[in-house]
Length: 284
Length: 351
Image 1 (cartoon, chains in turn orange, blue):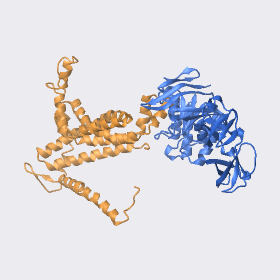
Image 2 (image 1 turned 90 degrees about the horizontal axis):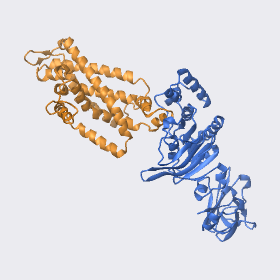
Image 3 (image 1 turned 60 degrees about the horizontal axis):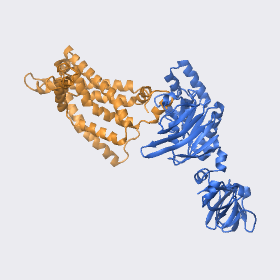
Image 4 (image 1 turned 120 degrees about the vertical axis):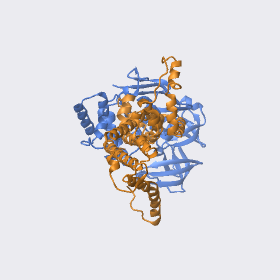
């Protein structure tokens, strides 16, 4: 960092405020959760203070390992799909005229106002057999009879991508709009077609932004706990769903806390790995 | 052999006309400068030539072949951009080899060509460096090497030296000119710096108001500007209001001056403008009689060492004279003097 230690009273004061906020809203709740994850659960009751690894031990079963692997793969796939869709979209968006860009951005921001619940129910309705878009396709003569597309893995993936897409675009927008428009032009004069220019210049030049966005979408979708229940089958339920289930229905707070801790550590490790591998090339 | 012809080329952005009806021939193997103030359309014109902008009207012929609709990536014109546009994710060598890589040249051929080009721009052995590790002048050379990588039919440079400091810019102008002459490649350079244009070009194309104002050799443009815009833009000029009174005579504030033959077109448009370069104007002590001399009074003397500039007030008109230190006129501020405007140096232009 460029800045060293604050040199005066005002400098210290301005450093104290974020530190205080971080402490109150992150460190304290996180410490409570970490502590609870080691507490002892009373069957049929709540929990009592203690220090045991039983909650973590329970975790290392095939059942939970499979859920963990599925959750991580689902989020990773959603991140890849989102970035693959949003990157070309955002690139084209930044090449539009300013006024049209604003219209698109306002539209995307308005999509953000929809909650996970609304998105989940809307898609489950749109993909259903009785009232869904397949009826429209039947009316247009594209299909013979209406089909049910939910619940299922494609429906879940679609819902997750729909949820994360605006964030992905908004995250890619600043670096892409800063991209020197002469870079693709230089590639053109050197004989690269527009498509090759996209893959040999624009994508590699934005490598850092792409990795950062992948990580963001991955972490973001990892926290989704309603969509898997609304659009997926029970085998598509993620660890976040299990955590919610343990907290709300089973009142097993210690086990839920242990799962949350574990999920966090694993995703943190993955994020670190992605950053190290993806960020190795020099970024501008 | 690569001769480029522009026929009636024009470009409109919505209601704004950026380039209007340009007819121009860029001769084979020559270096041509598109010179003009900012916003005159010169950058748009070179972008049209490169294929990055589609002309609204007119067509482009390369050796007689119509290339108006040919996309930029099939033209094989090397281009150096104003901000250089070096690929930040590639090393120096990879930047230079980019065009060859796109063409599918094999690795050894790429490496050999990169070495050749690095030698050409005097950066041997820097192939593995990163762009961020280079100085401004080195980046400039890499951009030039990259543009020349595919042995382009036409070499285009859009204000290539504007990012460099004055001293380096002067040195690069000479170097670029020598490089162009060695390769014999047809080259077009956009610049707003008339000194740069004079240094490098075989042909200067002065642009203003979206149009070509004059095209000619640097000296021709300097000596015989066709209008006041060119006279004013190229170097500095004394532009004085006159009335044409004869085939080879004008009236400047009541004094008759001899001039070279005035064309019939200009002779009809009165009042006209007399253009004369400051270095052609001589300031003489009062009483020195002779042809083409008008009385005046010295108002200011600027002595910058390498030259002496004398400002004289001749009946309300300011005439500036520049002389070498050894020819310094023996006058001081406030002196009544005679200002000589030699007939051969006078150019009469429509106002």
